[in-house]
Amino acid sequence: MASSAQLDFNLQALLEQLSQDELSKFKSLIRTISLGKELQTVPQMEVDKANGKQLVEIFTSHSYSYWAGMAAIQGFEKMNKTHLSERADERRVIPLLS
Image (cartoon, rainbow, N blue to C red; front, side, top):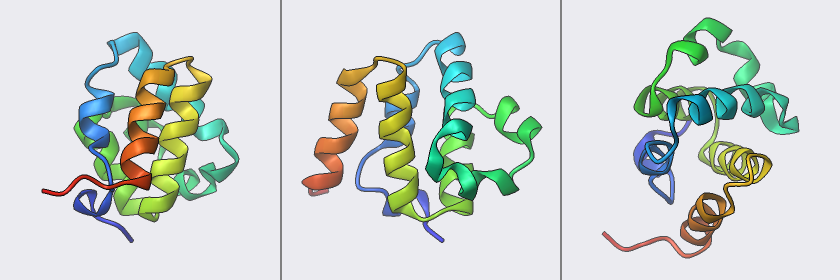
C-alpha cells in the first residue's frame, strides 16, 4: 500500500482548503465513487471523525496511491471544486520536484 509521501500531490493541503461542511461532504462522496471498494474496509466512523491529515493517512494506508489520487480528484469534481481537482490532477501528471 502507499504512504502519503508516495502521492504525487499534497492531498492534505487540498483537503485543508475545504470547510468542515465541505470535508464532510467529501467523505460521503468518496464512498460513492466506484473506486471506493478500497475504502469499504475502513469503518465509517473512522472516516467520519477524520480531519484532512487523518483522511490522507486512511486513504494511503488502505489503498494504492493511484486510487487515492483518482478518488480525491473525482470527489472534488462532484463537489464542483474544479480548482482543487485540477491542482491535484496537474500534480499527478507532472509531479513537482522537491
